[in-house]
Amino acid sequence: MEIVKLVDETYRSVDIKAHDSLETIIHYILYRKDMNKPWNYIGGIGINPYNAAFQFRAVKRYFRKDDESRRQLRHFVVSFENGLCVDAYTAYILAGEIAKYYSDKYQIIYAVHEGTDNVHIHFGMNTVSYVDGSMYSEGYGDYFRLKCFVENLVKAYI
Image (cartoon, rainbow, N blue to C red):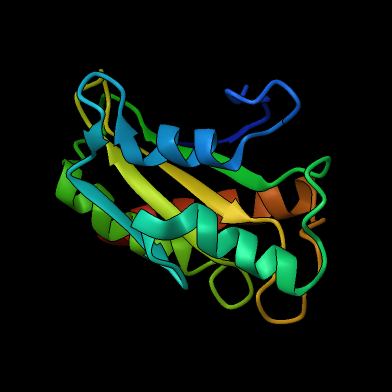
């Protein structure tokens, strides 16, 4: 069975004045910290992952929602338990499908993290909609809908 986890942490920036550094979170999602190079399987919808921070901020600026005191990114993880045999490529295919859950309104990046006890996928979603500039504010109801969506998707693929 898969696990969907919301990550609710503050990532410290090199800049002490910044609370949540968009670049820090994106770097954590997309790059291997042991080699400082991108993971093998990364992607995005509505965005170029290699230019994600700039593009997320461009949407925020356009809609005048670039206040750094707000949460800059929604970070969540989909993890697969050891009994569920999911290789990195299958996880990448699933990541693209999971990202579509939000892509009609929000830019989203993802990366498959391999080389741990189990393959898992990190997602980073802009909190400002590129469609109408609204802030993401769904909460736990959306979390449970996402979890149900992921469970059904994984059952269909595996």
